[in-house]
Image 1 (cartoon, rainbow, N blue to C red):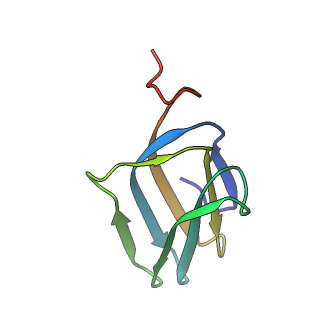
Image 2 (spheres, rainbow, N blue to C red):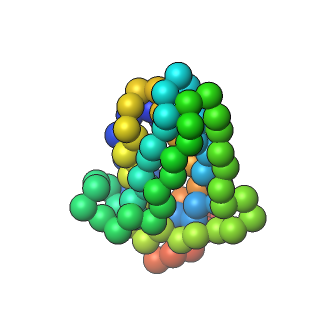
Length: 93
């Protein structure tokens, strides 16, 4: 769970579920396929203060370069469930 602009993963991965919560203020986040906000934006999510929303359960999406999250405020909490992949796109192990 993060509530600041954060690199979550620096390699390819599969994103399975995303949860956003607005804890005391409206929440807004962008999730990028890379290590910064110059990468391709894959998701834009918004919630009202005091609410939570989830997307992606059962719908997996490949991120080729990493996962970077941008939030609008420290009151926005984002959780991303992911599976890291090797650089050749395989599941490690």
